[in-house]
Length: 128
Image 1 (cartoon, rainbow, N blue to C red):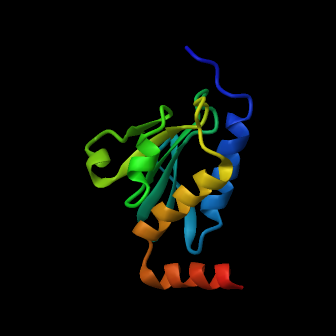
Image 2 (tube, rainbow, N blue to C red):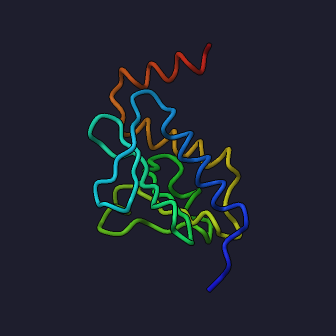
């Protein structure tokens, strides 16, 4: 088994903080161990668990799906979610994108899931 990048846990924490900073975002643990970021009652990021030795995230990428799946660290999500644009990204992968790109993908997932009112709030925050 490949060893995770030493900074994979730090990246997972940074991605979690970014996701939970989105307007109306909140953390939930619907399956006891797995943590997710939700907006309203809808999940926009699956974040795994802090103790996971191989941290990963799962996001919905309606626009960047092909770009993400071109990386070895990314695979279509299971349970049929991959057909709807959900992608799992292993944060310890050799070709893991930068934190900036990961946060862009979290934002893309948020925009695909969040109500328009909250997306407008996010846009206003970017303009400020």
